[in-house]
Length: 529
Image 1 (cartoon, rainbow, N blue to C red):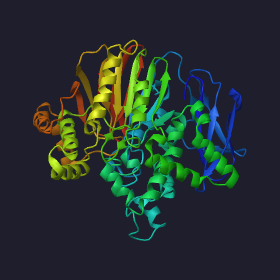
Image 2 (cartoon, rainbow, N blue to C red):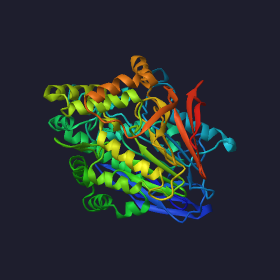
Image 3 (cartoon, rainbow, N blue to C red):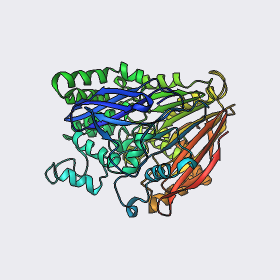
């Protein structure tokens, strides 16, 4: 998606030529499917569009109309390019369980968002894009529908019990999440969408530590699981994150197409790529960046690109951090850095995670290290604070950009994140910078915290909770964080979707939650600049 291009992703039930057409607007773009593990996909690049275009489209498979599907009650799907006025609206969220009942997970903020867009007419303000920052699917917490599908494929008790096992399972998981809800399917067909994975897209605590990786690769069932998870992510999510130029130059897509055309199925090529991407993180970059007018969006892979060896650990490996460092530049009105994991946590959690990393790394001896690793995995202590050096490196970059040391300072530098199942705004207070630096969290779209977990996080959010944990971190010789911040809005624990609006040098955010039968109502708002 840009001012002049759009990309349509299609899954079909057979190999075919896919065309995206609108005769009235002279739209006619085509692409052939490729096949992986018996499933068929097409990427159709649409170019030469006018800025601000709103073009209804039809999808043909070998000349047969396959989308839209009859009279569904939904408006026609549209190709929507960026408006030339420079205003940009990004709606985002994370952590969505689907399918499920209202009693299980509450109203679905994404479906409610789709319903407002389809029924609101001209009075509704549309986003320019949807950004989903992790846990788009849950491969380790299965719905009844997904469990029934697995029971039809595997013997009872066959490992991994109660989790997806391979690429085929993943394809059904995505079908349940995106295809079987008509509102969400329509939304994805008409609002440009970008994504990044988090742990549940693969497995809870994915890449939390070197020890965790060693344990997983010792399991006989892990190879088809990780290759299926990464391979399906590449198809169902990552292909849409790239620009048309990046896709045209992508060696993986070229190899997949070649294998599909010559052998009929590229599954083996996809599996080989996925295994290498997991074992050699530097071989693949899942992070990406796009510039739209005065805004740069950097989406950071904080899961697959981790540096995890016996003697080194980092949220990003060396190549990935070098890439991020190069992207963090001034000269823009706004710099947005999306990471599935919040960069700025409530102080109590930040200090607890930095303490745990130091102890697990041997600050309190060998016994302490073993206990620290057990606590890390049990309590999910794996955010940026648990990679203290990475946290400091990013802080150095942000302060340099915010002080105008890398070009004119942006009006705002904002981290967009999810993962923790509640929403809030945190603002950096020290050191002083020309840019307003903030952390905007929106989570969950549909998977709320319950009971004691909500209580514990509300307690950790309080200003007084940070002191004891900072004392612990100090005892483990963890240095004082290089920046200071405070929580200013929230926490909100309801299902939610947030919209960041950027116009000139202004930046504001609004959080909304589905209430009263699923209707979205404002939960909070803030002026960032």
